Image (spheres, rainbow, N blue to C red):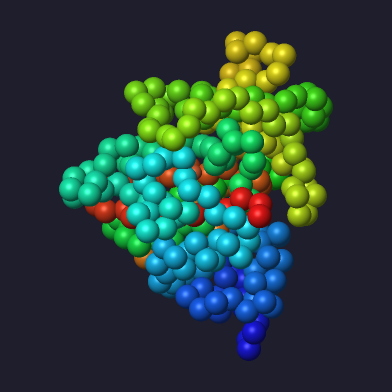
Length: 280
Ligand SMILES: [Fe+2]
């Protein structure tokens, strides 16, 4: 590392820009260690002005763990299945309406799987002229701000997760959840977890995949899930990322929720590459 990279704050709660790192070159060990330290403190890191192909994006992901092919087969990159497309355009050039709608409500990725991802990386290739951002919520800050009575209740609860079966999942995908390779069963996760690196408590309930709590009826659970989602996504806990072509954004999959803002003109192209990284 010839010159130390720098950090610049983007949002009030989340969102930090990294200056001085070119991700197209293999990362030196000390640069990688610097990113890891920064990432433990800043769960959304943005590297501007990058130009990576799918193999380079997968290689970046592999430094942190094991990138996995995405559940939705249709969007996997043909040459590099650990990378998938986030796109609103069909191969024919028509609007991909599933792609437009996809992931536009709050969620944490893949909490319906037995192993949780560590992080995910998005790389913007084409962006709409206006809006089309991605919004992140700080689930540690959200936890800290909960009333004591809610913290006590949640400390004893286990969330039940199943792919797109929570209130937001039902609202968004009532007409179809996309084709996946396997059937997903139910996976339990404690409603509050500890961050694996910094040890901070995290509210680990998301309205897309959390569809209940062990020992609680649906009538009791759904309003609680909605209440927690409403709490965690207040303005004071969220960061709206305005994409520029070339942005590489990595986010902590334990410590945040996210959603596509879904606020752009769908006839304008929005195309990104993405990889999700699991523990090695
Ligand atoms: Fe997502």
